Image 1 (cartoon, rainbow, N blue to C red):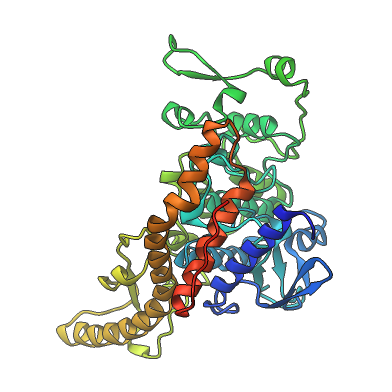
Image 2: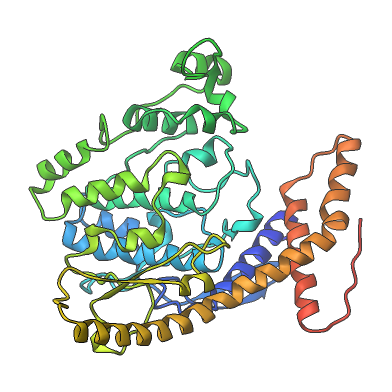
Length: 432
C-alpha cells in the first residue's frame, strides 16, 4: 500500500509474527504464519487455513451462549495463548471474538487459535495514550489514556468469556463514553489515583477537589453539550453488579457445575485496576478449570508418571514474566496425591526433578526472545538520542508533534539495527 503508515504497520506486524515463530502454534493456540508476499504495492500475509471465527461460532448457536463444559476448554486455550504471548513480551491489543478462530467447529472439545496481530506490539514499546483495540472490548486504561501493559488483553478476554457464556457482549457501545458508563453502572468507578494518570480523563470526568471522590463522571447532557454525541443504550443485558451474572446464567441455561467459579474468575479478569487483574498463569491455575483440565504449567511436557500429581508454583521474574527465574520453584502436593510416607515423598522429589528438566527446556526456548529484547534494550539506549530524543526535542521547538508513524519508524530502525549487529553486517544510519 502506498500509505506510509499502513506500510509501517504491516512491517511491524511481520516483526511480531517473526517473534511468534519461536512458539509452537498448536501448543500455544496462536495462528501459524507461513510467510508474506508482495502484490504490487500491497504486503500480503499467508496464514494456515482455519474454520470460522468465534463470533460466527456463537452466532450459529443463536447467541444463546455455551454451557460451562464447552466454554471451559475454549477459555483455557485462550488463557494459554495469552500466557505465551507474555512469554515473548507481546501485547495483542485487539482480542475479541472476531480475532479468535475455531479450527474445526464439528470437533469436541473445540480448538481455537488467536489471530490478527495488526495492533500488537512489544510490551516495552507501548505508546502511552495510543488508542488500540475495538470499542466494547477495550480496557478502561486504554480508553482513558492510562499507561497500560499486557493486562489489557486479560480485560478483553474477560469480556469474551462473558460473551461465550451469555451469547451477547457485556459492554457494547458506539462510543467510549457509553462503554465507560456501562462499566461504572455495573462495576463502579475507577479509583482517583488511576483517573489522575489518564491523558483523556477530563474528556469523560469532571474534576472536583472539594468532594471525597475527586472525579465525577459527566452526565449524558454534559457530554452531549461538549461533543454533540448523544449517548445510546445498546446493552443486551443489564447487570447491577457482576455477581448478578450467575443469576442470569441460571435463568438462561439452568444451574450448571462451575457457574459460581466462573463468575468469580470473571470478576478477577475484569478488575478495574490493572495491577489487581488476574494474570494468564493464574487463570490457568484457577479452580474453574479443575473439573476437566490439567493444572500443570502451560506447554510443559512431563513423561514421568510419578510426577503427575505435582504442581509447581512459579516465582515472578525480574523481567515481569515467567522466564529463567521461574526455575526457583516450590513443589506442592495436590489434595489427591495420597503421599503419606518418606518413600512417597522421595518418589515425588525424583518426579519433580524430571519435570524441572522439561521445565528448563521450555524456559530455554522462551528465554531466547527475552534475551533478544535485552540486547535491543541496550541498543535503544545507545541510539535513543539519535533516533528518538533528538527528533522529539526538535519537533517540540518548532511545535510539530511526533506522529505514530515516526514512533514506528524509530522502533523499526532499531529492529533493523539489531538484526545487522546479529549478522555482523555494516550499519548505515540516516538521520532526517
